[in-house]
Image 1 (cartoon, rainbow, N blue to C red):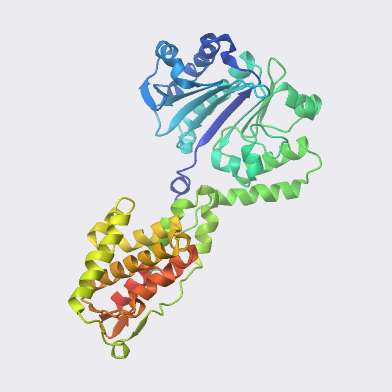
Image 2 (image 1 turned 180 degrees about the vertical axis):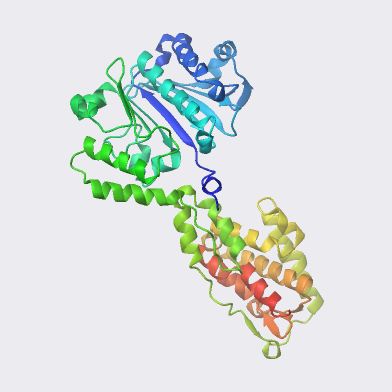
Length: 442
């Protein structure tokens, strides 16, 4: 897999925080920020704006007229959308409070790889550098950065994620902007001697510096060494080897791992990766490559299967297929549309939904029993209609079987095993049992 494909969900985040509310001067303070943003460059120029979930064509005059729609109590939040790339937008926030007067400008650029385009990447990086320079020259700043959003938050604790501003320097980025208070707390002399690709003092006492020429080079060995040297310089108590080891481990997240999943549930495991996120996908693929579910135990040789003991076999089958199985379709048709077709292709989707939502083991007992009935009946129905199987209804539901070839499969028992836990969905998937049954008649 090409790295660009592997890392396609990554985005660049550019953020600057200010220790003041720019809206104290009314729309004029906001307008000064808008002037800076509009001059950023064609690629990052806003074209539309989102106010109270309504998307409108962007203009300063229209924003002035509708600014009240973006204000709630003592905060104002404005979203400006750029059309050049798929999901690129600015978020401007203004907050007024006893101990929390601040403003922020965030630019999210997605896809991140637009900065690696041969003819435009360096120019776009320069636009971000200029954006930081101009903001820091015209407004007091507290802190700012630009970096891969995945790498920027990797390994952060919940407490660090909640912090508006870093309480200490625990990582450095491609672009780093330290306001005067932060610079003085480090020591201006030490700050100005930081090993960096570029370092500039800005009006007002802020310092702007880059670790590498462009933002795309953040996970290479050279970039990690530059980040480690800068971080250890700013925090002498850290050790270069330990810091570098942490950074190298983070770089693995951006290295593709080819999936080699168990063929019986490969599509199900691939679906679970949708919940991994780039920050842990590398390790999840490695783990899932080693995973093989237990061999199905929910079957008997056909000649050993108990014969039906229900008084009305057609009525029992009708109950399975026209009440229980349709009950599952009614329950999942929105989240899993393929359930309406009653096809084998729907089974991985159903398994994935149950794994994702963790329904089985979380439901009250009565609802869990209904889910078991629905899942077992649906699986049995698919086996009957696509594999030429035959229902053998039993009063005790777990004993009800579908005869396929020389084996009697127990779909209700399988469903009971599946709903025990989230891991049980993978260990006892509907998908795997069906595929074993299908192979048994080939």
